[in-house]
Image (tube, rainbow, N blue to C red; front, side, top):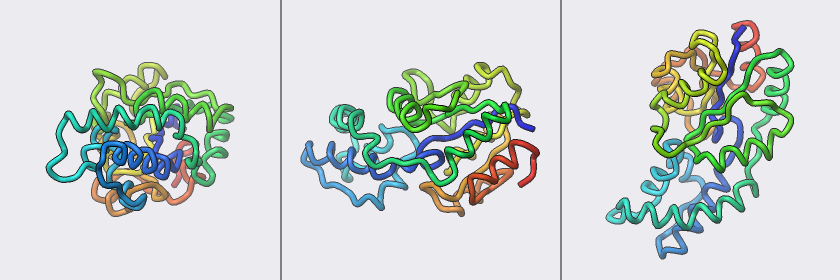
Length: 220
């Protein structure tokens, strides 16, 4: 049995794409830039919001200055609207409750900025006792750098072999590999199964309950 399961947030625990798209489009429109269909955003997210803004800006406008201008419009709006349309994926609340009941620690490792990560977890999963909820923090490199996983391992006081890392993207699978922990890709998130397969994680699952079996007794 694993002692700790670390979850990515966007595309793994919560479907947040509609709120991310709406808030980014709000910021782009405020600055006079063209907006994007919601369907374009799953391939823009996953590497932190500054990279999201860089990808959303038009060609020729992808400067650091413009990224910061978009960020300044995005943050206040998203802080208010980040739970308008976001929802847990099917089976996720039940999975977290079951892991907690079995005494398996639960943590979050996200490239979403810390304030929003904390707020969303508290809003959607108030009954779950997470041992760590970490988003992107100033001075800490974003995933796939393993720093965020190393910080969680210290807080949980577990070793890498006692951990299952769950995410929906190649970035997540590479993060797990870089941190030396077992990786589990989920197919219900923002990225296609083929992206997960390219990184060859230990497991790829289609349903939330599959994660419980992996964590509880190592069976897929």
